[in-house]
Length: 132
Image (cartoon, rainbow, N blue to C red; front, side):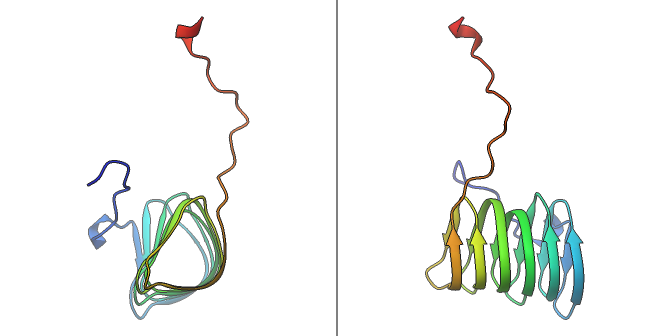
């Protein structure tokens, strides 16, 4: 793994939750860790961690997560605090807001994209003791 690259969640054993193919759910989803959707979801998703929309996934939602990986279809608004990755079979219709947006050349977007940094903490930076 190259330095600076985030580890990808590649197998289901590394997931903290999963809506598998054939699953349909409407409502609010809050989770910790990595969550994968391969079924249909409609509603709101909130997490500081990683959301994966699998190739069979179809999501209509307002999403606010730390990191998102889109391999399936998404309709709505997605805000990521770290980054979003849209892979080859990914299709996004709506709005993307993230400091880093990675899009494969075969992905499809019909979306407004904004790169915005996460809010900066109001706490002052610690002073370097060596400079005293």
